[in-house]
Image (cartoon, rainbow, N blue to C red):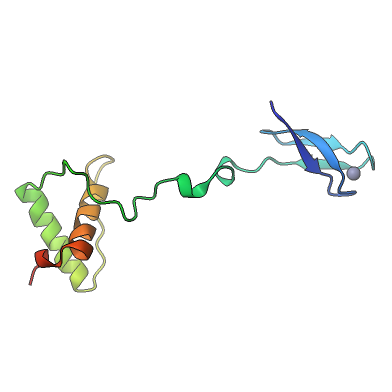
Length: 115
Ligand SMILES: [Zn+2]
């Protein structure tokens, strides 16, 4: 367990605490008790390092089967009419890939727009 320096909430002097778990500490300076709560893991590190998928083109090996093309064309039509589209299906079935494919057509390839 790593040791961290945390400011005592009473006297604001640095007290050594254990990272990764919440427990009560007695400040050696002011003899007051306080509870140290570790910050959640997502608060640590660089949040921009996490990929959001926004701005990511569809994979190069994307295969547009007749089913996928029909679905993508209908999705595009709904979006162009200002409607919202909800793609649903089991995990890994390609919802995000189709969404990225349609978004790519919408933004990058206006020639593909259905009229
Ligand atoms: Zn203190």
